Image (cartoon, rainbow, N blue to C red; front, top):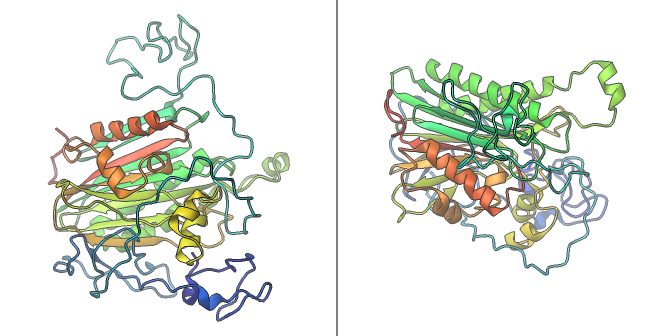
Length: 451
């Protein structure tokens, strides 16, 4: 996933033995693997038309800056699942849906991960915790006005000032166990899930106005890396920094794709700063990884949709007209995606492997290299963008599955739709934190919101 070696599918290490590679290497110096066998990725393009035709007319702002030695956007990362043509008229690769692994498939022995791969789970995570997070569709998380707060466990007792039920004694969920926010036409919900002891996800949703007064809405979703220290702080810092960066850049007239790139860089700096702990703190935990998280964001205007990401959190396009195809707009920075891109495995083989969800890109002081991915699209019809962590897409991985889970009225009831999608993940098992934002396209005028 690194940019130094495009002729080798951007692999910085040998796909066979994980030995570091130098620019221009044709064979691995350690194992002799023929690097020319790795197929080259298609060229990235700055704008894709969602209807499979040539791009529409140019946006009212200039094109996003080309990459150079400064912090300007990398070339667009073409989403593998998007059917149609790129802006140069060439066909895009269409990846088939990934079937679930066979139930009786033997586990593949895990090879030692390379230095630029990390697993998004701690080694000693318990299978279950005694108090499950409330189901957001039925639990009463708080009263209105002077009404008493009811316990989420027994749903009968009142909650005292210390956060315990006066009837059954259960401690109530922490503030981040379940969060909801609606900001005009965009909304997000985050839930601890049914197995984790805390919520390590975070999000930010907001709206802005471009210099000409036209509206823009945005959503940022971050997933803390559980194998790192303080992942909840990392995701919160990243989502806040990215949102603040976008809200500052868009009204100035910055191209949304450039603004998204800058926002991811700002989020990275915010997470990196968390590693600057006092020496005394490191003495007590010298072997902990630096705080880390993934990030995915979307900016929607009246005619343009921009996404940006690092890691394996995703964005999906779901048209209101369900006769048109849905699409996944991002490609994971993961071991499985890397194996598929290198031509070493089929998608079915890669995602059946227990190393499939080891991530190869993240925000954090120990990240091998920061390489923000950005892509821009010009949809030809109304729809919604689903921005989510793997806590949701694990239960709706293919674009068609995600579209089936999204309510038909998602564009006008984004908060309700986000709750439904969180419920879909909880019904599927809720094995991870679940966070999802629902962003309508095109951005409605200022003053419009959910019905």
